[in-house]
Length: 417
Image 1 (spheres, rainbow, N blue to C red):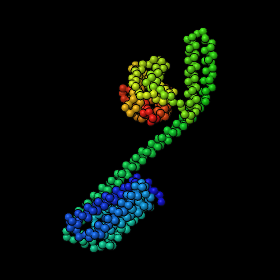
Image 2 (image 1 turned 135 degrees about the vertical axis):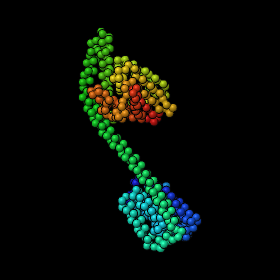
Image 3 (image 1 turned 30 degrees about the vertical axis):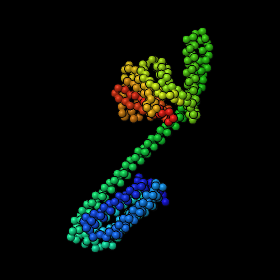
Image 4 (image 1 turned 90 degrees about the vertical axis):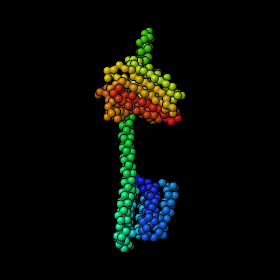
């Protein structure tokens, strides 16, 4: 037997039966003591008591195992059909308006078990109703006798209300479960697409690293020779040395691209001082674009992959500079760092551009997606920055409005990354 994988788990059988038992006790007591209907109490109490015992046994089993085989779920639903039939035999047979509750068992079976089992419950309900017609043919005269017809009409309304309410409840639960499942499937498809893109990007990066390694080595050799030739020209030699240093950094980056599976080294850094240093160097490289810093203490030193995080921050700064320049504004970029009470570190980079439309903002961070003019960007900066944040257990989000866009990089409290 297979285990049920329906949107409603087996615990709903217990809840449904308790609700049915409560309704049965209420209807039996009401018709017997308020309406003085001539129903035999002994058999009715015995049937309800048996259902209580069965439900207690089922509840104890579900405490040990949260799922039940499909066949056992169907057997319990057939048991409910049998119990309802037994009660109806002693309370008017097929003319009892509560025969509509058979439909509830059929609907629940269709929701909780595969077709062959739900068909078995449906056949059982149909057979039970037909059996009532054969077992109590005189019930027609009982319910249409004086004083009982009005009770029958009211019972029809009550039975319809109970059945309609129960069906609505279960259908609503199922539709909500299906919507959640569809959302999960959509998220899984999106994750798969991202994984495919990331794999392709990794292959592209590895190929580019292989091709660029040789010319960068040549540049490094020439820069070293040039530095020796310019020994008598300190300023020019300093520039040659800077070229050599930048080439070393490029080669280190390419080495990481060729071996992405190798664990990166994380060194503890004081984040406020580190951000100040990275922004200061970037400002020089970016022709001294103005930056406003708001750096508050961010707790103890954090172990980070400094090179990867530097690339992420530089990407965000480059985006902010280009967005501000594209808007024709000379306002400074705002960089803020602070720590929340729970230890989460928040790093924000805000530009003063024209903002990003909501439709485009939803795609920011996808590989090869860029809001810049064609030829001005590959659309990988934010994507790689998101990956770096994720590797540190954090996240990167964007919010935007007419006054500009703010990128927020969050790192979890120490020990959670």
